Image 1: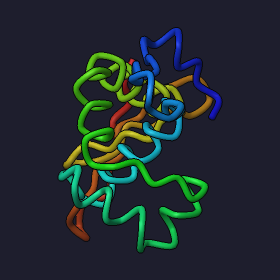
Image 2: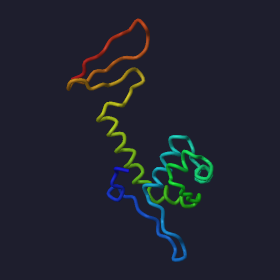
Image 3: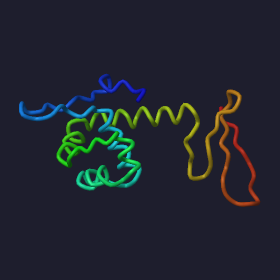
Image 4: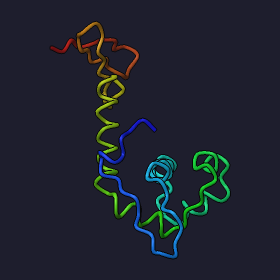
Length: 129
């Protein structure tokens, strides 16, 4: 809720004269991220989840966009969605949440350390400048 979605390039859909008000891009982004995290890629499956999944009903505040609206949101805002994921990655990097398969890069007292994972007989850390 703290992101400036308009600055990132999100737009409201353009409804026809007979249509209802468009969904808030923030709500649609929440739905997209929920689907991404729960491995729901299909717009039809996301629509179905908004009707029966209590977690998603709460998250979406009982909004139930149809599959076409969800698909159009993805198509029309693909660059903005990528920008959100880029910002999230930068945030994770700033607060040291990234892990490497062989260890974790940590920032402690202004110095970067690479803490290795793995075997019981190895307990080393690398000091990075």
